[in-house]
Length: 333
Ligand code: UD2
Image (cartoon, rainbow, N blue to C red):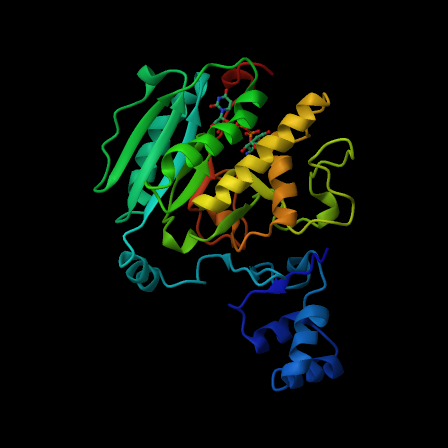
């Protein structure tokens, strides 16, 4: 599986060449390639991009804006928000959005919902589906125009791992039984999070993965994929494209239904074999995306690790985890 990264389209060819510090002969060859289409393919695939950590070599601010299978990676500067809003406005779409808050995680709801109402698909139809074991703890948050919230009761669970993994089955059923005539797209988000910037229609696609904020500039061999062949989530060494977070993913109803159904089935097989993947449903999600490539990737702007941490490539933090004391908030440790 190719792990090649392709340089962001934001960088002009001459800027890229400057930054590469290549020998003058090679530089001339590269410049020549921009007027020669056959060689430009070679250039893209071999010369410029066969690096896992291109930022070491470059200025530290270059970004990957296209995958090797030609899916766009959305970063600030890669889209025109006014233009893309006006295109989607004509389509009258609804975005279903799921979030789970069980046990002490209800404390994250106020910030999550209030900040979403400020930044998340503003001006578009959004239907939040909130799953909780304590409906009485759901805060009153004023919804914007065409934004609705439905609260659903789910049973409490003793293990945070079961809560996290159990989301796949609930999402599968929600999509199959209720959403077909209700929504066009769906996003599934973690609740221990907060929005800080625009998250809009630029994020929509048939199948959308978000690059994990801890691994976006790591080499593939350091990704925390499941490495035990006994698990259905197993990814062999040398394979994989990106490491995706399970804290945010989405797409069309049909595609996310297939994703959640497949992950639920694989989780069940693992459970029957008394094995739990290293990062639970996130491991299965990564396996799924390896063999079912997302057609759009969201950069770590769309799920950052901590608002106080910065990285040169991340110009805007749109959505971020909030700091939490796992020992204190989880039902088990
Ligand atoms: C990572 C993933 C998370 C999930 C988990 C599985 C990232 C950034 N996040 O986060 O998506 O794959 O690993 O190992 O990669 N929840 C409750 N009550 C609980 C426990 C969990 O409602 O007591 C829900 C809640 O919506 C939470 C989500 O499950 O946001 C994931 O749990 P987590 O945030 O504690 O998992 P974490 O931080 O290890």
